[in-house]
Amino acid sequence: MTRTRQRRGQPAAAASIDRRATLLALAAGLLPSPRAAAATLPAPGSLAGALAAALGRGQPLVVLASLQGCPFCQLVRDNYLAPLRRDSGLPVVQLDLGSRAALVDFQGGAGTHDELLRRWRVDVAPTVLFFGRDGREAAPRLVGMAPDFYSAYLEQRLAAARRGLG
Image (cartoon, rainbow, N blue to C red; front, side, top):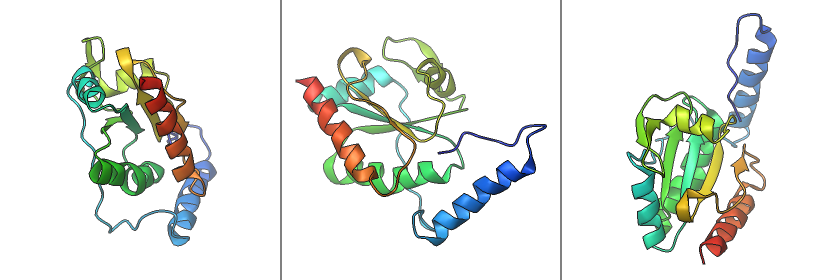
């Protein structure tokens, strides 16, 4: 769950705590090894097109709001979302906080990943969003990363999103 960067005037201890937490999680096996091959998720050019394809298959569109260099984002992507996409065909895409990559939103408006995520008030990475008809959120967001119960939380949100489609 990172979005923090050391800012001018911020104690170095805060950045040090983030590094220590990451190292402890890595040592405990909660995070993948930095040498492990990272999974990738597609970055859509058009959310409207991605949503139409998802709904055409009777599925919600799952969006991972990620942040470059975020170890918890990598954990969610590599261990949960990419395998679901690969094994069950779940429509999952990734948008990146801070990214200026071009994107067409659900209503056909142009912008960037970062602009859209800010409009959606996403300020924690990772955040997983579930979209249904008309680009409306079909289930509560899954904010942050709780390794012990993440799979159960994800399955609950997916079930709620699927129910919301019918």
